Length: 92
Image (cartoon, rainbow, N blue to C red; front, top):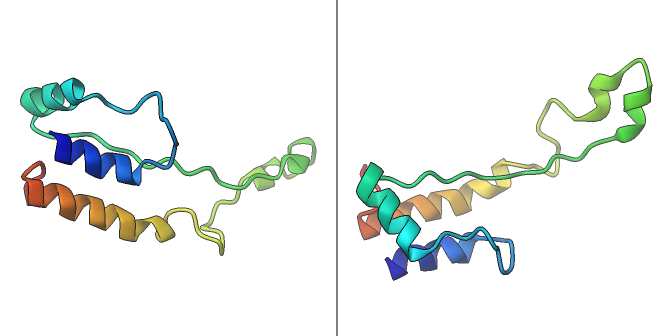
């Protein structure tokens, strides 16, 4: 279990994350469900000036910005999945 937590901690970008799962939680989740549910949070750029206009839909972009939100994270997600597979936490 320590190896699973180590992998998760390496990819957690929130220093001192108060919501980081405990070993007991991860063990219970794997025993009860057989898998871990993970998510990626991305915060898109927003433009509040558009909320008070006749085009409020421009507040948040509807397309992937040039700086990228999700695509730059895919290599880390692939590494995460690969590392967890090697530990036997995920099945192919």
